[in-house]
Image (tube, rainbow, N blue to C red; front, side, top):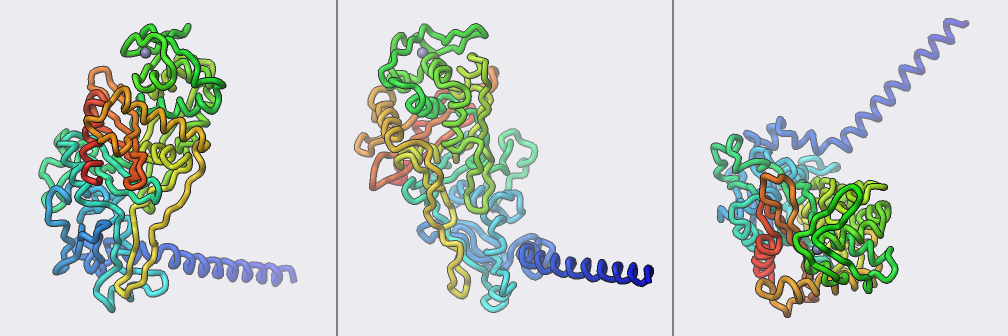
Length: 456
Ligand SMILES: [Zn+2]
């Protein structure tokens, strides 16, 4: 009896394992079927690594950025548009793994979970992916960067549509440079710096410190800051570029006084500064459809006034992506609540079915409406008393903050400019970084202006 009972037990174990195996197989087909079908080893969909029969990728105006012709994937006719959009559209070798061509290959190939490759077999064409991007404005951003490394992004802060996303260095996917893997000119060329470039924010972070000050330090608007060229602590000094004397918040931000913001960070405290930054999206997952976005990081240190001072001016261990910088500006422009940026307007099958239609989605509130209004006034004041209206027309109501982020004493600092237009017709928020470019207001501000001009 005992051995019979054991045999029954063993039989049951086999049945259970077999059921589990079947369940796993079904689950895998449902979740992984698209990956299998569009694996580059599957010759049915791919020839020499190229997605044959894949649908078009178009920009917001329907301009074709990538199409299939005679069994070959081809790109836009203008080499500058091809180079400007390389990191979003992708290439034919899979080098740009974060691109739409790669991340949306299942849609482009016409595969779906129920019909398999039915669409491709019947229409010989996969789904079309329409982007929110404006290709001519992207070309303007590429030209404005002028061969320098960096990133430019612009989005509509009321809808979430990303209008410009350009990363440099880049190359023409129709003419891959021979020295691409050897030349310093192409360092990090396969990375989309908009979503994956992590940089010190430098003085652009003073906007976050100001928000933390407004929310946590009573009477901060009437507080006097004093700068004799540095913020002094028993651990050492946070240096300022100038002796700004006595200032209040608007002037301190416009003149980008390090002493004032190092002091303010210490009044706010490490925990609250970090919390304010996290509300703006630091240490949080920020997404852009299926495209990977690196998480921006801040880790303030308690009981170290010097380190906290550096954190307050964006020069500690804090790192940020251009995408998050743009979203922070969008949150302030939109009354404290960011609308999540998105890049894919729609995916339309050859049979005409629309899936993955882009929708406007609110993120978590970053600051109260009142604080957003105060920050907006501060950022507009920066143009009134510091940047002037040489690059942006006053009627557009530009708001913004420059940054000059030190990295290596041997090298030029990174030039930042982040901002938005407080304008119902052109509700655009943007971020520009020029690596080793120099001063933000001299180098990145003109780039931002050229790109916004192409959109307004
Ligand atoms: Zn100062």
